Image: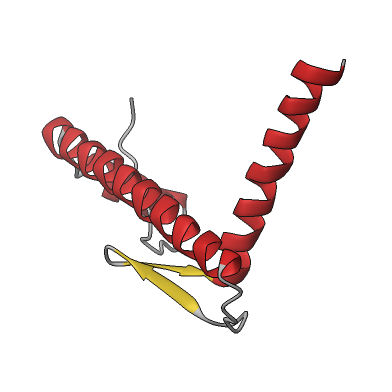
Length: 102
C-alpha cells in the first residue's frame, strides 16, 4: 500500500512521489489510524448535529441557512445537515414502502 498524503500542494507528480517516499511504513500506519479515528469522530459529531437540527425543526425553531452547527470541534452547515436528514428520511420511507407495501 502506498502512503496517502493529502492536503499537500505539489508542483508535479515527481514532487508528490518524493514526499510519498519520505514517509515510513510506521508513519503511514499512524496516519491511517489517525484518519480513521478522525473520520469516526466526525461521523459521530455529524449524527449529533443532525439530531440537534431535527429537534430544532420539531420545535419549529428558525435557523438561518448560512448558520453552522458545531459538534465536538467540527462545523456542519445547516444546508448539508438538512440534505442528510432528507436523504435518511427518503431511504427510511423507501424501505418502509418496500417492506410493507410491495
